[in-house]
Length: 504
Image 1: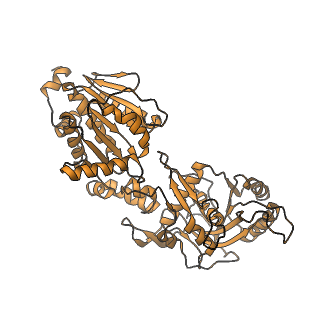
Image 2: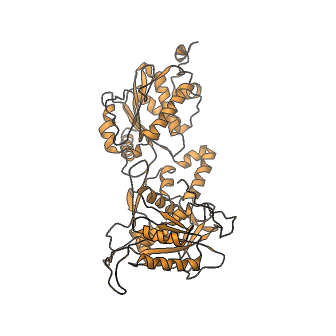
Image 3: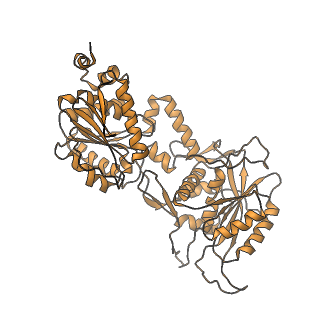
């Protein structure tokens, strides 16, 4: 039997049989249901729109591949193109093409019978898969989705880009559309299509939404359940990435960064201190404000200026039982095994002081507290104080240059520290810090990078008309940089390994 006759003789018209026998893949039920519904709409030219929301690493790409292989193999009956869209060309489109190419070469129905054209088009018989990037500047006009318009990671593609460049590709054939992804914010393309598909589903009773969460995947796949539970312990159940990537919950595109429940997790019972405890490990976190040229007792040149703030934090390498949140989001006592516990013990603030004066006082505090590390905001006005400290405390100072990406990473990790119960503020909680927490806004950028923009908005005033800053907050958040280090509980408190960035 030659390979061309193999397709006819082994006519696996049912998608379930096709994946099992032709591809050697046994899909889980929630995957198989998607493939059945979408292929049925394609085969019968029904032009339906589907939304598939799966948690990370639960088989979304595998389902796509099986669907494409099925349509390519039997697409000779009606021909046409499958348009596959990814948010970026590098690496997402390239990875999608590699996955398809590997499957085409492995499947006995397509082995040695497929071609690749122009670097992004794969053909079998009269059917093709055409890959496009959904990046805002990508030139993608001119294609027609004869069989299927498939938009992967739709939460990361701008709605305007889709409406202008991709949606018209389905017009002439009324092609079936499917949007794949994990939920992010309520203003994404995925969320828009999800709401529309729900409405259509309610009107005619035909299932268009396939929504699966980590609990459902974990119920049938034990390793996945264990992995997700570990991620919840590591990052916290209410961390934005855990909520969206695994439990398929939206996060607010623009909201307060520190809701009351998160602030409550920060409250500790220990008092502030004016001197260190013997045998304890400490770190300094410094956010740098501007300096005024003024004589002693004179009015500030800029009363709206941030202060330079030093936060002194005790690092507990033993972890211990602290408050956190479980998988269901309830506050519980939990043993922290994901990193040190941080306890704020002292704060100092200098408003408008010359950096030479601040340096002298920080060096004196360093002699008293003997911190293992000093992390400082060395962006802009912070460079001068950083230079002084670096020269005066060689080998101790870790500078941070705030960029959009760096501040986003610090924001994510700071939330992670709080949500896993590893940060404790001294009691009572500093009123100035509390005010800054309450006024701190966060905005989620609509892109694959999922960057956070956060901080107290410029010019923000409280009810008394006074400016609200975020210097206390930024100083505390620099703990996220300290948390990137490889702290080891087996070593004495005075010994800390070198800086070792971790992936979020």
